[in-house]
Structures are given as structure tokens and as C-alpha cells.
Image (cartoon, rainbow, N blue to C red; front, side, top):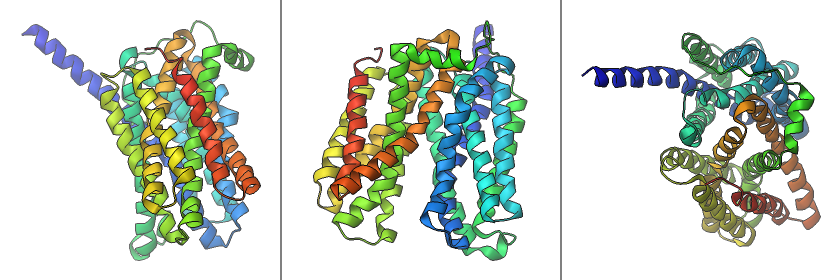
Length: 394
């Protein structure tokens, strides 16, 4: 009887710890509102494409700058405190648009949103490792990505509702999205602050050069490049999927944009599926199946000339790419258990691939005169992930 009570008490304690952390993953998804918001800002302010595209570019820029320093910050103050700082920065970024919608106001808001998200992604993932055993880390991070995707899904829905219900949104219109998410950020801060989490403190603090030197370890470098490819494929699909449909099928942008929603639908479903399957399926086998799905998808996007085939290709990328990040991230953390903070910073810095791939895809498309060039660049990323599969620990 005493043993059963102890077990139940342990389970309740674990749930009380994981729930606030999962709410933080939801807050992590706020960064994806930049795509929806930039379209509304462009329309409201009459911006050019280059001016509007500066908003999402800022997000990835801050990942490059802040990821490694955040790993160092975690060594000094701990992971939980770093996550709390990221939530405060995120909440501040969401409050700014309430007081105005000027171009520079929105630039400031999105810059802070990117900085907060860089801090959060770097610190929140290793914080999970303090709560979960190594063999379940990948599945738990995958479930976190599923929770994050819910916030990404809701952003365009809330913005669209606000845009059509101006009379009950305090004059904010689509910008009601920001205070709505700010409330969740404050709730996340309150819940995580009240949650006791035991952390292992590092033996010594690391400098920037010491963190970067970790890339000299072959497996860490492979993981870093794998993250770059994953994010490049993710952003690349969102960018070129509607263009492929416009180019080959001739649909208008309003209809072709459904391709992006389709990708997120299957990516979210893949995260939920992976959260359960990775508890019983070996990471290498699961990763291999995911990469094969993306390879088939690249073939469909290159050769497909019907809407159905293109949709199938997009759906396969969504399913295949949904679990790449948590598996690579878990592999990197488990490979260097004494330097998880530094490794986390390096892996999140790899999100800069979201800037590199779209640029390369644009040049390739211009050179080849069509979206075949863009798909070819993404295919290079998939081929690299096939190579990486061989290095995953069983």
C-alpha cells in the first residue's frame, strides 16, 4: 500500500513538472505568428515584399547571434531561469504591438520575439532532459513539438477572426493575436516559476570559443548540419509549395496557399504520432522511414504535374520532417551529457539554415527558370539526412 502511494505521488509530481514545461513549448510556437503577421502588416502599411520579408528574416538572424551565448548563460544561472527570461522577453514582444502598428514598432516587436524564441529553444529543450530519462527524451521532445505546432495553427485563425470582428477586439483587429498570446506567456511564467525542478550544475562555465570548438567533434558537427537541413526543408517547403502549384497548375495564390496549411497539418500529425512511436521504435529505424518519405516527396515535387501528386508530396514532407529535429537534438544531447547547455546552443544556432536554404533555392530557381531548382536544393538536404541516418545510435 505504501509502495503504491509512493508511486502515485511520484507520478503526480512528474505531471506537475511536465505540464508547465509543455505550456512553455506552446509559447515557443508564438514565433510562427510572424508569417501570418507579416502579411497583415504588409497590407496595412502598404509595404514592398522586401520590406515585409525582413520580419521573418529577423527571427532566424537572432538564432545565429544568441544561441551559443544562451548556452553559456545557462551554465551561470541554470536552465529554468533562462527559460523564464525567454518568456519575459517573449511577453514584452507581444505587448508592444498593442500600442501601435508602425513599421519600426513591428520591427522592434519581431526582433524581441526572435530573441526570446532563441533563448527559449536553446534552454527549454535541455531543461526537459532534467525531467525525462535519456531513452524517452526524443519522444518527449517530439510531443513538445506537437504542442508548439498547436500555437502555430491557432495564430492565423485568431488573426483572421480578429480582422473580421473589429468591433469586439478593442480596435486591435488582427492584432488581438498579440495580447491573447501575451496572456499565455504570463501564465507560463507563473506556472514555471512555481514548479521546482532539480538541475545538474556544470562543473565549469564555458566561453564562446569553447562552445564553438564542440563542432570539431564529428558527430556534433553532423548533428548541427542535420538541424540546418531540417529547418531548410521546413522553411523551403513553406516558401516554394504554393509557387509549385501556381507554376504547374495555374491556381491563384489564394488557392495555392492551402499547400502551406496542408504541410502544417501533416507535420503536426507526424509530431503526435512520433511522440508515441518513438517510445517503442528505435530512433534510427524511425528516422530512416522519415527520410525515405521525404525522398519520395522530392521525386513527386520534381516530376508531379497534377494537384493530387503535388499535395501527396507536400504531405509526405510534413510527415517525414516532423520528427527530424527532436531525434537529432536528443542524439546530440545524449552524445555529450556533460556539455548539454553548450550543445543545445550549437544545435539551435543551426536553425539559421532557415535563412541559408531559401536563398540558395531562390538562386537555383532563377538559374533553372522554375521551382525544380528549389526542390533540387531541398533534395540535397534530404540526401544529407540519409547519410546522417547511418550515424544514429540504435
